[in-house]
Length: 408
Image 1 (tube, rainbow, N blue to C red):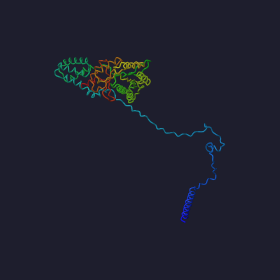
Image 2 (cartoon, rainbow, N blue to C red; image 1 turned 180 degrees about the vertical axis):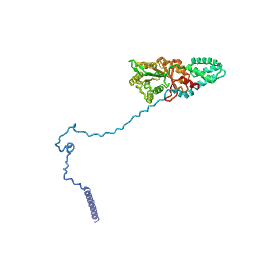
Image 3 (cartoon, rainbow, N blue to C red; image 1 turned 45 degrees about the horizontal axis):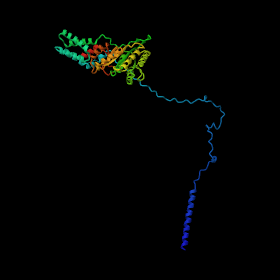
Image 4 (cartoon, one colour; image 1 turned 180 degrees about the horizontal axis):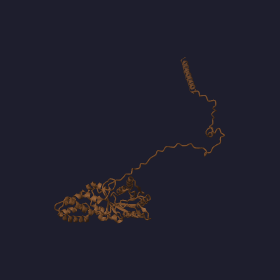
């Protein structure tokens, strides 16, 4: 009996499990109803059809009887003009240089401060009651220390001894007048110290601008002097073209161009490390075309010990002379170098005919006597002196103003 009951229970459990599986299967097979298809939509083909030919708007599907126009007859829509911002380049303001007349007089205080030792030293020695041999030796040493040079110093001391002996009683005013006269005689007042910038006659017979070459050793302030000289000429009412023939230093070319822009002078330049003679030739050519008054040519700062480079400097001058004569060759010397500047001057004078000297840095530790020594060595006058870093600190050399600054 127990066996029969157990079999019935097992059968009921098995039937219940089978019924649950069936009901569960039916529930999983029910899917949500799909939306009704549009009645006008065609049945989806079972095979993918090839893509239809492309249509261009409705005109491709429904042809019209209108006459077709060619592309030449169809006007294009006008494009809106784009507003282009106007960029105005910044043009540096052209400066008005300080007048050159009396410029050295205006710089007298600066000159007297730097040259005080020479003038006051001589006056102090000459004011002694007894001028014995030892005092005259001190006077001679003072002149030599000021870079006057041996021969000019001996000449000056001899003349002073004779005149003091004749003068007898010596007041400070008498001594000052005596010393002024002798220093002026030593420096010279009859030389032509003007920078020759008058027009020349070219090789073809036409008038050409005045040509000024500026030469000198590296470090003397040659490029700066050329730029300042342009200001001097512009202040005197002349139009200037600058030639940047120092092609070995890009900085020198840029520097010269900046100087020119400040006074409205155009700079002719060439490629870096290019032929300096070619640039100089082009500068004169442009000066002729523009009708300029003066062409300033800044040459490379040659070391006077380099023979090949010095020969090239002579070539620059010869090439420029194919246009016409070079009116001025200015040698720039650093006044602080003293007697060493004479060595440079000799070599440059052998290569090109120096016509004048520009002494720079005369406001520093320079010895004013170098003016006398350089003039004696070259036989040409000092025409310009540099008395500071300012743009208008290059002044025409005036012996009277210079000596007055020396002796106070």
